[in-house]
Amino acid sequence: MRHFLTLKDLSTTELSELIQRAIVLKKMHRDGVIYEPLKNQVLAMIFEKSSTRTRVSFESAMVQFGGGSIFLSPNDTQLGRGEPIEDSARVISSMVDVVMIRTFEHEKVEQFARYSSVPVINALTDDYHPCQLLADMQTYVEHRGSIENKTVTWVGDGNNMCHSYINAAEQFGFKLNIATPEGYEPNANIVAESSASVALFNNVNDAASQSDLIVTDVWASMGQEEEQKKREVAFADFQVNADVMALANKDALFMHCLPAHRGEEVSADVIDGPQSVVWDEAENRLHAQKALLEFLQANC
Image (cartoon, rainbow, N blue to C red; front, side, top):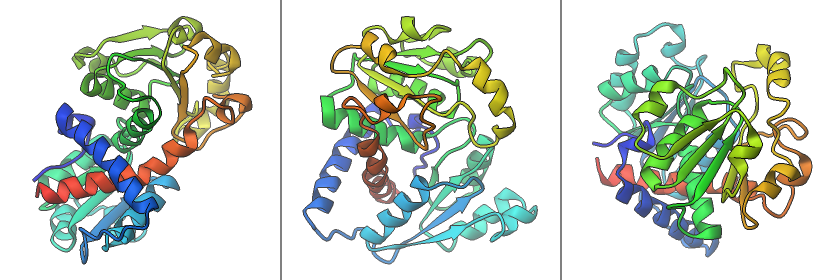
């Protein structure tokens, strides 16, 4: 049985095949092909952090695959009332076919997976966001072909998305520049443990130069709202705008996992401009996760 807690849970070959499969599933969906490999199967969706794209994409994926899903908030389960994770994992996994978890501490999904009898998917933790990276990689491949040996620049907080980009650099073979304010760098252990080409900067312009893809995220992630004002000051020089994009290669793309704050981490003319592929990126959450669900069920 396989779980998907970080990108490192799949090999480079498996990830590449999954991206290609997502592209095929996307075409099938647009062509109106009925394909129901998960008919009568159930996905349990445990949300301790709310989301738009994660819930809609996973629910839609299960409906389109002929299955169903159960939405579980902290108010809907005993997990929110102190039941041990291992007990919940044993019970929930005995009644469903896949479990998706969106929570705070990464250790929660790791512990749940240890006691689960079905595949577990990390739909976001404070440390990683691997499902978003599947969509990002699919989007790049669709627009520009292979991302191997390309240069990607991450601008902003050294957060869960940044950590997953570090993993992606290793698994997909691209160079990663990371531009953060001092004190907001990614986890040093995650950087040190990576075999990828990762360079840290405290200056956006140096990092963005000759990049093939520029990526950013909100300055204050979920659970950091009380730091918003402080972060606005720290990140003032880390907006992705036309000047930053001009430093990248002419055919560079812009991505953002959304939701976005125009005028903060990205200017409106960039996110709504011709280099932005954020809407394809958002839609691809559906198709990449369908490919992931299919893969995990085939490897149970």
